[in-house]
Amino acid sequence: IIIGILAAIAIPVFLSQREKADLAACRSDTRNAAEAATLVAADNNGNYTNVTTATATAAGWNQTDQVTTTFKPINAGADIEISSACPPGVTQTPVTFTTTGADAGKVMTPP
Image (tube, rainbow, N blue to C red; front, side, top):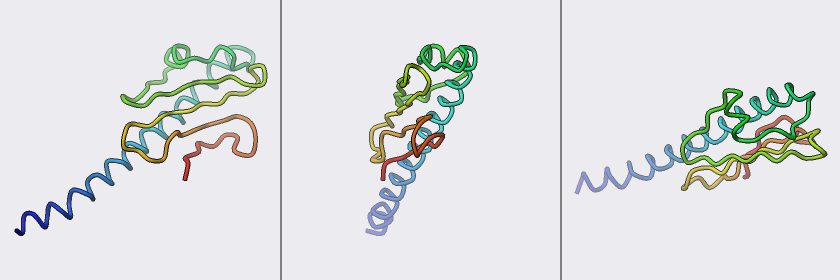
């Protein structure tokens, strides 16, 4: 009985910590992708048009397993939107980054 009670307490706590760790990895991937995108754009006169998963990886970015990141150049390549879908089990997804608007330069997580 005691083991059952302890398990009932420990398992939800463990799952909550796991989700927090997965969300942190997703946010980190997005932040690092933004830095790689900036490096790629710097090599292209500040234009984000050539930013892809391949060019970001070539610039040193490493994507975490189960995190899917997309790069979307906007405003004729003058800006970029980056979106990362977090691993299954993370409720705050996707994590985003943009170089334009009120949230420019911030890694944003949905509430």
